[in-house]
Length: 261
Image (tube, rainbow, N blue to C red; front, side):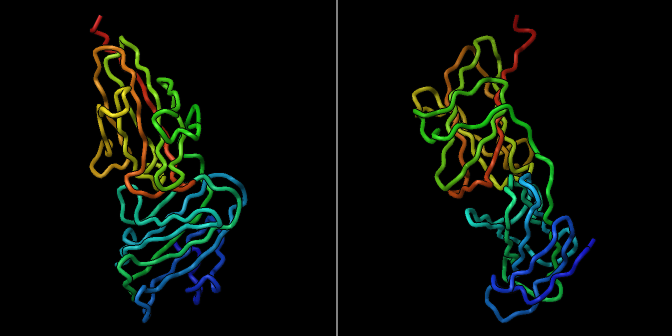
């Protein structure tokens, strides 16, 4: 599955290699005296503003490389170490049509004949659906966005320390409220945390960082209730990073027990 082969030298930004999209490029981290190993620079330009997927394969192809890449443009920089439940890096982001660059590297700085890689940049369909968007300025408890149960909101942790707050009023007759984030499983680099608060903004009802499988970075949890609640939900990154690439969707739904009368 190699449409093209890497062209050396491409080890500096001055020697950056321009590659086409929609084709697998294969190369390797060759032997080098550099303490940082062999770093390969690539650049490409999407033809339209849509969604962009960058997938790098190493372990999946039997390579000894623990590969990573840094994706960057004039405004954002993102280092991707892995993908959803895989050690091979992958990311899916909303992408304006302009030039993007990649710096490929081996995590432990190793190199040699066994450290091959393959990479593909492609335009893809929007991976998630939503009914509304986060309104920025919701970085504090007092500026929380109102959240309508049953909605799905698209949001972004756009910088280090960005907190997204939502205000949730639950119906009295609902037995369970379900909170779901979709992000990392669909290609977002975000590893998110959900923290549910009482309406005093300090008493924590529930905290979750995982989903329905081990190592799942998309939080999901159910919260039982016996009456209406006035809650506040905080969405944040587990780490301190953030960018226009760190997107998520948040869904909050109510479930009703048919036997409760």
